[in-house]
Image (tube, rainbow, N blue to C red; front, side):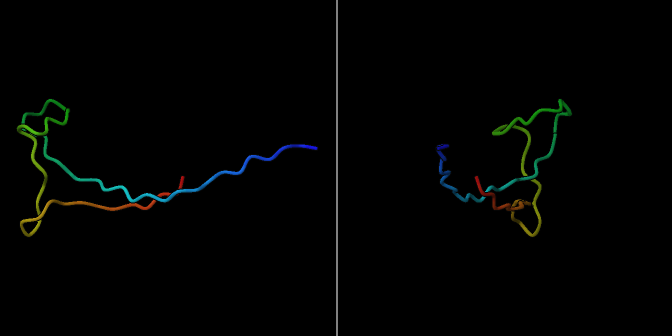
Length: 52
């Protein structure tokens, strides 16, 4: 008889936030000189829901 492992699935929402590269060093310097891009005074973001 083969044992079965049961996996408990969880859901999470991840948020990505787009930042400038103000000093062109190709690194995220935040907090620091690299600030979030803004649209209508709010940071530009995108959400993704994942299941693990």
